[in-house]
Image (cartoon, rainbow over all chains, first blue to last red; front, top):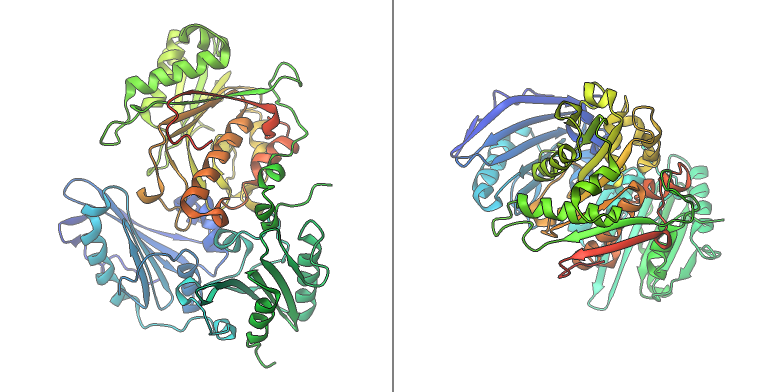
Length: 275
Length: 293
């Protein structure tokens, strides 16, 4: 990781850097984020740079810069918890009271207020604007996103990840890993609302090989109670449809579709890569 | 055979049934047939208008809760039911900087331990250094006190997870959504020592944006304490509160924080308490506005 210490100003507006800058790697990230480290380790996380600033009233903000190894991975960690409006910082960003998150190239950045969000807002945004240009050129999002149907796609609600931890934080599917996700699987979860009355979610997974994809398909069908998904589709008690398809080394699952036909249309619109 | 919890259980409204299915009984209860008593106590003045903790009110809340828990008429007698004068007592707190165990709670516990006759030099308060703290090494009794919050990996940080610092390796407990946290209560330094669990729901955190995230948007002034001798029962009630708040604020689709399976498994796999709501005697005291559960 680049040594950001000298490059990032120690004074932002009337906020002053406090304490020692810290750098964490894959072994030591637990010291900083406790169990949360597992979420970063599920991506290709390399190192994190952490600096704290104190404001005039001794409130604190924390600057965390995560080197995620590639722009795809930085997109992934950024995309998994996005919900606030764009802040216009870095390649993609969001800001809500007390929290700025953005990605730039292979870096994901979060700037967090520990105290009064209103008092820290200007400093948080200024710090973000200062840091973003130091992080190098922009990078492309994961290629798997190109497989998603475009009609009705809510781009800002699309998430990319690998493991079941991120899936269940984004959209709870099951308490066990019934789709056999791990570091080798590339997953994209997307929300669709092509009209005011129709919406659904799509989970699209690329496995290392066709055998693993077929095994995941069978596991999912067998695990969805009370009777599983005997034909790869079922209507739940809320009248919404769940439908799974497997093709070569890919598995796609539509959740919460308003009709079987809608689920089928969404499946048909998936743009499987030519292999 | 019980199936794994899936999204379908949400839709069918059977989430709590799946999470709550239990076959074990509290390790430290006198009789297997006896229910685990859990006290939820709330007070509108537990926090002032600036969201500062009110030490006096919190002490009163703890006193009332422990009196009810032990069926005693005064707080000192109640604490004497939990500890002996000769006990060496470790108060296991939590120092997470954004949402630590409130010092007001620690003080209230320590005061009553002193009132119960425990010597000051035999009382310790610690979190990260419990494995090397001499008081905790020699301890004959433990009081477990921490705030309730959602957790990206374990689903919920409660009284069970609070003992993770007693183990040599914390990451060793992370696989499978921290499923085996219940083992912590069987560690030699811990086993059979826990006299009281205090899950602070004064300002619980019901949601986080990524791991390690604290944001005041997702914290609310619930102004309560959940108190019991059974850590699994206490956390089960805590989970119900988190789920109720998440359902209200985030909608049914996000009712459950990620799979807090360690609570149920602490019961069914490790037998350190009960996660079965039918075997929990929940007693609610005090303020009821916005109680949610």
